[in-house]
Length: 261
Image 1 (spheres, rainbow, N blue to C red):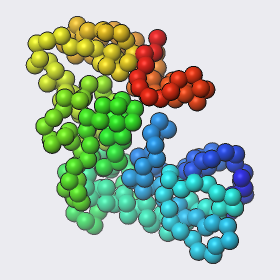
Image 2 (spheres, rainbow, N blue to C red; image 1 turned 135 degrees about the horizontal axis):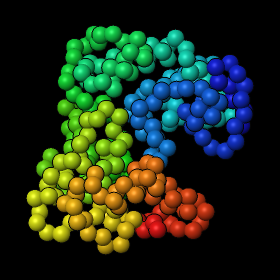
Image 3 (cartoon, one colour; image 1 turned 45 degrees about the horizontal axis):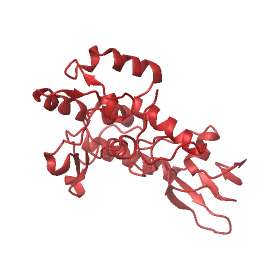
Image 4 (cartoon, rainbow, N blue to C red; image 1 turned 135 degrees about the vertical axis):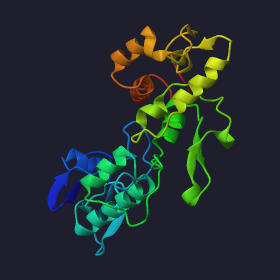
C-alpha cells in the first residue's frame, strides 16, 4: 500500500490506522487515549491529522487512531491547522484540570500558558482508558461513564455499587493523570469484610483458588511483587497479550479467562 505523509512517499503492508502508519514511519503524533491493548476510541482527539484521499481535492481533519490507511492517501501531521487544533484541545484540558501536573506539563509542551476558559480543579481528562481497560482487558466492567456534557464523569454503577471491582489496579495503572483510585477505594471496602478474600491474581485468572493472607496489603505481598517483576507491566495486560497471541495462532478462543502458569 502506497501513501504520502508530510510530503514523503511511503509504503505499508497489511491493515493499519493512520496513527500506526505514522509511528512506523518515525513520526510522533500525540495521543492520550491510545493503548496497544485496547480498541481505538478517539476520545482525546490530540491525534488529529489532515488527510486527502486519492482522487479527491479537499483535505479533511480526522482522528488518526480511527482512520484506516488507504492506497494513495495523503497525510499531513504537523500543518498549521493541526497544530492549532491540538493547542486548543490542550487549552480545554487545562481549563478543566488547571492544577493537575500531567496536564500542566502537556500545556507547556504545546505552548499553552493560561486557558481562556477559566480554571477547574478536576483531575480526569475523560480519556476513557480506565473504563476501557476494566471492560476490555479485565472483563469486570466495574466502572463507566455517567451523565453528559460538562457533568460527565467516571464512576461505579449508580455511584454506589462497586461489587464488580476486583481491586486489580489496572485502571490506576493506565490513568495518565492520577485521577482514578478505584483500587484503593475498593481495597478499603474489602478490608471491612471479615470473610476470606480471594487473591486478585486468582480473580484475574493467574492463580488457582489463592486466598489473600495479607488483607489486601499488596505492597507486602510476594505474589504481587513476583508478578510485576515477571511481566514488567500490569499483569492484566500481560495476560491479555498472551491470550491474544495464542488466539491469533489458533490455539485458544478469546471467550473467557484462562490461567497463565
